[in-house]
Length: 572
Image (cartoon, rainbow, N blue to C red; front, side, top):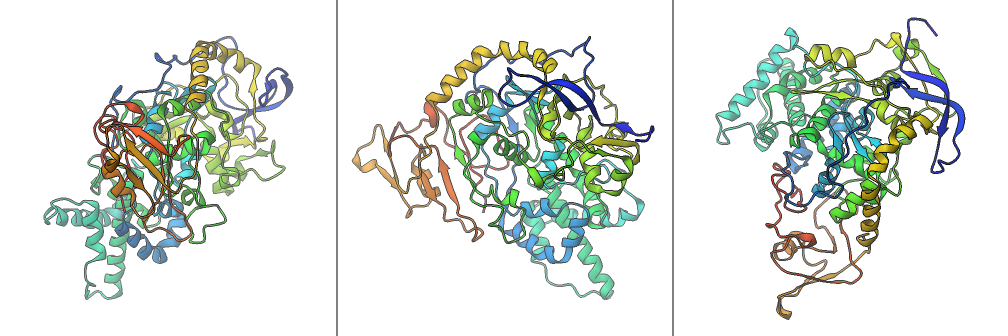
């Protein structure tokens, strides 16, 4: 290995603990992400939560706005432009991300609220009694389909693209003067889908300019709604136009670090906009006890949509918040590496192999993997957040040692970006063995935090047994009001739509088939926790789980304002 190459991974012999049996540590060759803490000066442990119980409705105010939706107009636009631009989308690394927007991820407010309770803005991780975990750049690349490579979102606009941006600004100005008074998503799409063909004296040149404008407008809406959302959450944003212009011209932009920065910021402030569907998918991928039943397999997806996006289409499982919290406190299983070959998969038999700078320089996949492995600053549109993969090394296949501290470089976006971007030939790493464990030193370091949470973990384990969901498939369920007569009993069956039933009944436990038209390969179901009997007693005016509250809201644009129970997207 060249002396000029900086190692991202360190190999050393360590006494390691692997698997569930921690009583028999073994000495073996281990692979660690850097930096590792100095044994004489271990870092301070994260601060324990003040409360060990679940967040209750109305206990905290969360103002996460915006949520991924997939309207019919948007799907029509994707269908129209895909044959024209699929090749370019693949070259700049956004093909999977665009196609995944044609599928629907149904938000689970309770799930995200309980998860947020474990977030530490100091470490950029979720701090659980059993260890740390977080959303990594790999997660954003796999679950969001967003590129790790390219220019930063804060890069200065090249002079050659100023005309393209000016043309997009012209569309925004036209819509500001229209009946809608703003460039909202519906007006933006209709402006291009419904306008008559233009007769242009420029001939082919005019057609090319019109096509470039529409493509840039399409990407601007995609960025505004799905990737880099920001208030107001229903309009195409002026600040994404330069990014859209670059992508439309085939110039790659590193969207993954920007999206991850916005997710971290939302978790730290409990406010703002981010592609939080990635966060929800992260939970479903890693906590099997909390995931809904998937309706699409990797082998049942013949329309070109990434299987990882398709398999979570339109599924949902409503769980008691106490159960969700209990699973986070003490999961039956946590999937450290759920993606397998869907990620930057290590070729079989290559565990422990060194990857030199010249190898990284020749492979975009290896360069993307290297970016996931080193601590850095994540530069977003209006934020800079710290990324610390060495604190969650097992998520990337490496052994976990006591993590070292990393100095912040967040004085300005340019300086922050310099910590993310790496010169490929100057770095080297080692493929992980994928049989990761923790060092004895790490186990000893984490023990005080785990012990401080022991009583809460024991209580959560008892709660988990008490409120464990009985997942029973039901073709018909009956809901009975406590104060009702026999005339008030409502039967919910295949002849009544879900929307109609929710007008009269707070759904406590049922399974109904949706009438929403979807891909023919997908069986859509509304999956809700069932009790042991098909009859349920509930006073009207009570929110679910017996807590008083207003009726449920179905707004995508205001995810939380005050907690009001589990909402629904309500989008076509």
